[in-house]
Image 1 (cartoon, rainbow, N blue to C red):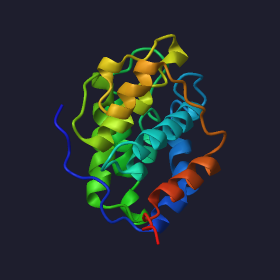
Image 2 (cartoon, rainbow, N blue to C red):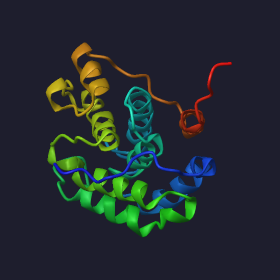
Image 3 (tube, rainbow, N blue to C red):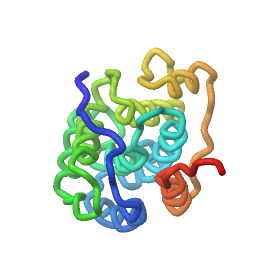
Length: 191
């Protein structure tokens, strides 16, 4: 699966602070909002796992991972097979004009690619897209499927699947936003 060039490139710290506003734009058009398997609770769980993976994946952009989590299943129709839902999620990302929140063109391209292609079952060499897909696949236990390390793109994802790790999900979006702000802060050098 071809990856889109990009990564953690120069987004303002304020971009991560508008998660609730972004959710307020996504919720009204979400077709899966209350789904037991693909609804908002799943989105939040993918965001939480994605932030864990991003912290362990060099060059991974945690902002893109959270945006993917919010958008990837938002346009899913039903809980059965719906291969085009990824493309609809990418179209939703485009329609929201997320650039106004301070996200770069590269970040937006990664969000769209991750949403569009997450339904194909492939792997990605891009660390951010890989973390997105791995975070989603590490929730397969919710539908009775044990995540398999062979289908993980990142070392962190493979380790989690191989060990059978179950992640504790964030209890609310404020927790996700706080973790995202902490992960987006520049590293401080020891004194």
